Length: 249
Ligand code: 13P
Image (cartoon, rainbow, N blue to C red; front, side, top):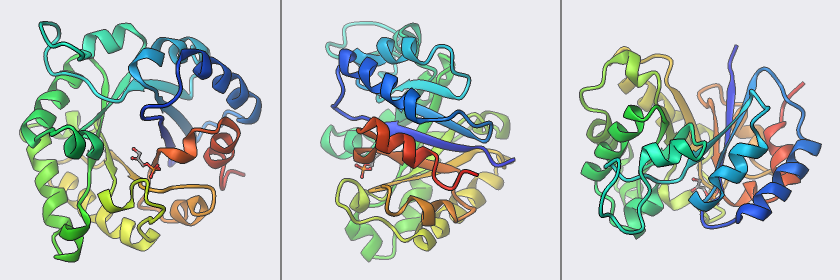
């Protein structure tokens, strides 16, 4: 059975009390299904509130948006993987394009963070994706496979199976411009081929970038997609519940 994953990246939105209210509303509108999972990536300050609110759900998970690679130390303003885990996180985004392009995260940082996540038993959701000028120059596949190689080098197929990949073209994030389902599927196929060559056939590959209630059905119709990573359209609990039930029988 294809188990779809709907991941909500709240970015710098939703404080703890708002998170509690959000999850009450979400629970009223979302019916648990065996073929779907819903993961939430709140700001660090709201991790515990979300973890508490979903503690009885087997289909939901909370994760951090970012971690540092060291477990502790003099790194003002940072959050370590073990600390996120203590707050209830079971996953973490790694190398989101906003981290890479607004905060200067390099491939080397991304690789170290990925290892730290695995070590702390957090499922890494590795974000990859090309910029508009790279797409226009025909470099999409080269950029994406370079990012995969930099972050995942040396991992065996079994470990790669515990990683989730999110393909998020940078030009489609928060712009209202999403990749066509066919464009997304094409890159997903390349990512899958890369993974398969490393014996990692079961790694899940999500799509992200301006996913919303209008385009979700046609994106999910593409069997290459194992789910979606959603920013803006995940901020309204009722809308997110509807989105995560799209196409469900
Ligand atoms: P939007 O859905 O707001 O475009 O954000 C996508 C994203 O960056 C999810 O991580």
